[in-house]
Length: 295
Image (cartoon, rainbow, N blue to C red):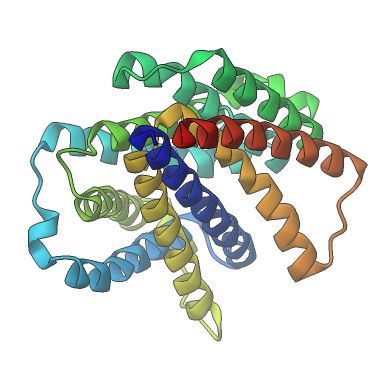
């Protein structure tokens, strides 16, 4: 049995968990963003992510797990994480949501392209073909508008690139840095930046006290996002980047499922066809990785 292929399968499972939690986080973000500013939502999300980390750190070895070996790589990954969050928020404000989603899925293409020069991993035409086929499925599902081609769309492309760099760096750091340290560094920087943005500029005027069940929704948003980021790091720590990354497309499947269960939204023919293409590309990679694990 190939240890590398078995590890990639574990990474794929963590990626599926991460995408399910990301969709849950996005759903709560959409809900609470109707009443609270983006800066306030990001700030409290990061705050609850750090609170989410406390019991994990305590149960997995304490403060020692936060020791940083390579500050340069930790700093770069944290910077990529913060830039990703800032650019996504900006893109959602300036572009239709479907266009933003399509462009953000291009991070999978960037990961496939970066995993060779940065990580020294072999991508191969099988994995690259599955990535491209999955992206076609995304285009079918989301049907981007003509606004996709305007210059401001490069903000979302930049977010996808920084997202890919963040995840590739998590893979690069897997032998030197603890997952807890990666999470703590990334979310602390994001919390500080979002806090400074709020309290030194215009967005502080948009902040409102949390009322009713909104505190619970903020907490759920942070816990789901924190769990997603933790699972995402584990996915790239354990599996080869080019094998794991295409399963980011499962977020579209999770979104359709959650939309049906929570809101009764029935998928149309484009969603069904596109979803089938995405599932087929994922099953193809899973088949090849399983065959590798069994050899």
